[in-house]
Image (cartoon, rainbow, N blue to C red; front, side, top):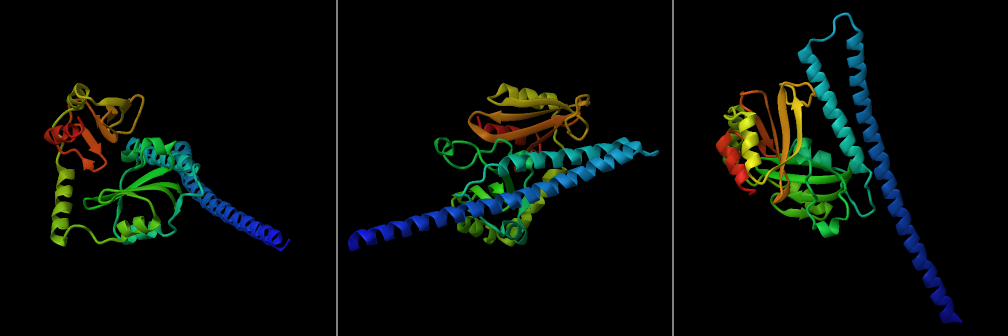
Length: 290
């Protein structure tokens, strides 16, 4: 009887421990979801204010000029896109996600610069497709000099996957923190040269028209996954005077090229690492993925 009683007590204790672990997991998920709802509410409020200001301006006796209107609608489009992407990503939170409460503070403190969300469209988590099951999280990226890091958020501080240009897949908060808080991989002088070169690259006009770029990409293995009209700033507009398109390559589905231009003027071509400076640079970039 004593042995049977001991076995029963041990089994009950083990079950209580399992229940406590499950309760802790659900509590952690609840905290993540509450933080996600708070952040989404803040973004929605920001967008609502923009819409309200635009409505007030439309009814005023002196509405803003067309240039200002384009800037406002472009900003609203960005806010709406971020709200949609984050809401979709936050819906996939799980108890196995990595909690990193100080991720924003660490990124700012160590001088990481955000990469445009649009440049991360289609990026897949750095795990085999057979293990992924479904794409989860809101992909956000940062760079610091030539270093880059991408995190898939399922909450403001919850991460499903991490990927680093220097270290590959990041499977723990300690690994992410080590990459983010590490010293720059370049010396101060080399980093200064890199920054200068990047700034100069932004000032150099592309030397090919949209039609020429379109023909170049179409002749290779690239596929246009989105073609539309746009205004003079590249913002999609049904009756715009320009053209815009997004391109992908079968050999690397996560890589994207964003192209837009008006008439015979130099086109604008971007990928996540920055602008494509000229046609020679475009050939070099696209050639890497053929």
